[in-house]
Length: 453
Ligand code: TYD
Ligand code: MG
Image (cartoon, rainbow, N blue to C red; front, side, top):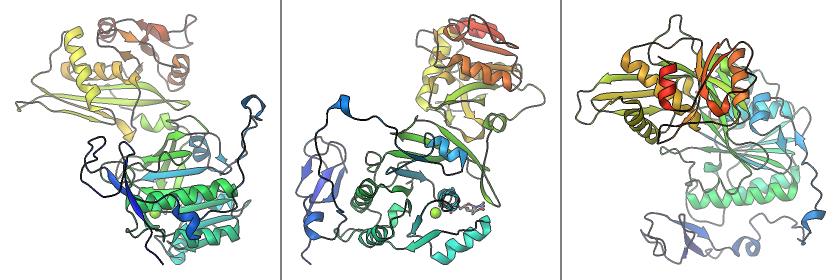
């Protein structure tokens, strides 16, 4: 076969270059050029999946029927939740995470449930059917109706899938696949992108639900520097403490649901078990109040969640004291320490500051600001905060405390878990109050620190 033509595309700006170079001559980004196959290629070669393309036509927006896409329930409630209420026909879901975190386990469990009602094809490029069979037995799954295919060539996978017509297809993992159209090794950006593109086309044309498993690289991005995220409908990402029992699946992109929705699981001897009441597990209760610990109410996706913010402030032997943030943004921590100095009058120049969200959850929202500052101060002064106190609120650079979305929702969740006092932004305090809760509404950091002392 003639060698297919390739070109190089800059991952940063999208510019196309005929030759590889260390720096993109268009935008100046370094090491951003990746090999791609010339766009005409798959159709002409006859190898890449093209399917029976429907002819496209222009429609008028007001006349497009806005009917909901059909959803299928996987039977795993927490998975259906992160997907926005079930699997959507013809959608492509990317599931990313560290090797060994539980991606194959979760999908095999979902497939077993789905296979009782729909044709399911599980394609593995990593494990043999025997290994998958062993795993299924260990998980106590019947596996009736799950069709297995051990194959890594995309063209051959899609040939089989076109004949099989599964309703749900899992491809584990995208990094093991290769397309005949490219010479580069499996796992390279161009292979990952081109293979995924063919699978996406297949999903849309056959109305098949496709799950793509992707291992993450060390820097935290999915292999093929995020090239897949924009191609798929939904991106789910496994988080969780290493060694800990809990696994959190977060939607970081979803064309059919809310982002930052969390599904919470516990890994046990029989695979992943759903955790239906996650507030209860993330809240590691202390018997006695301890300094540096404070409960906050976060709201990830559509569900409020109580988590414990922990801080340790200790005299530093270093010229540049350490600021370490686990589960939240390091820069945000530095900023909040500056606000604490300027508007709270507390300088921590000679102190190491460590903060952590217990249980391995990541908090991406600004509601963590106020609880974080209060936990830091509590540790610094070695003054414990009450166990039945919950706090949330954004803190601005001028020391103002700003409201965050869904205040009442958060307060109700807090009461449910035995919280009796709350310090919240004034804009989040309901006029009629919340039964069983003593709410202190604050406008500034100063007021909050006073209320918490
Ligand atoms: P796996 O799903 O193979 O991870 P991934 O596909 O993301 O690479 O997860 C395997 C890990 O989970 C492995 O370390 C063993 C553990 N495990 C259990 O603890 N219990 C179980 O029932 C199973 C199947 C796996
Ligand atoms: Mg796996």
